[in-house]
Image (tube, rainbow, N blue to C red; front, side):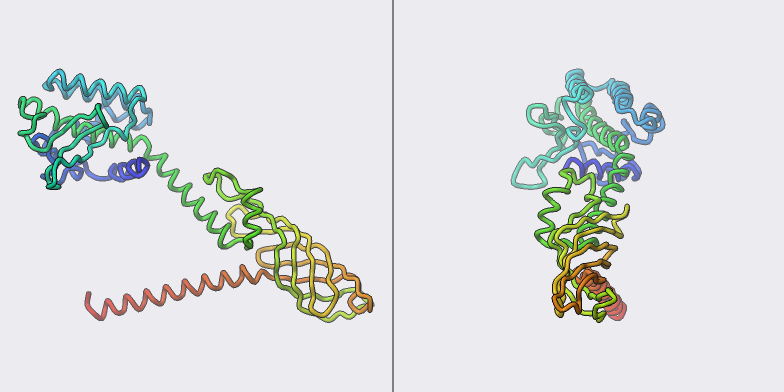
Length: 344
């Protein structure tokens, strides 16, 4: 949730400051926050905060915020200002984190419209009632103004924090998108894994840190596929027959973008019209090319044979995915057509 709030704040950086308090009902001590002139984001980013925010130095930004706070709070009651300064020092020293500095709503009764704002948690809360006749506001006009201005200062600090992490958030979002694409290629578009292979690869090759992306290598273990086989020895029958192919052990390497893969494996072939054979095979995408050796008592299919295999499991999966895409496209066309006819 804290990360979502930072992302939301980063988005808010692109909005005019006045948008933040566009609703007149957002009040503290009876004062509409959009009418408070202190702690303006535009003034801060063109004044004290300009260079620190540009440099991206957190401590310098905090120092600029503290100067902004002290400069605009000369009319605040001393006890209230002291309480705020203590909390700000806790932030600078790491006892509080930026997400502690957020305006939150607290319902005070059955009627959901009866609520008040607060900042921080537990015993450190600073209450910011909406109405001016609440206990925290009715002491003086100075106290009402101080609490309203403090609410705006909290927003200024939130925006400043978001600005500091904005570049990091952009980099992180791009990296997450890339990781998602890599895993999609590895799991759904890549070399197909049967359940036992998925288990083996998760035990031996999968990184515990998802941020590192999927492994570049993949093991093939008792991997079945279909193919055709043809004898090549000069003294054998060279006709071609269908064959079940099993790779007892093999290894696959993915390209940088996980769009293609190549590998080497031990291959056993089980033709339907001749004796089984054992050999080696190379893999590129869904295709396999191998050589197996057979011991045929009759000599008809004895010796070496060329094997051409295909990953039917992966190939069919791709075609099904294309079909889903076409189906969705047709549905969208029909939906747009019906909408146009209905005039909505």
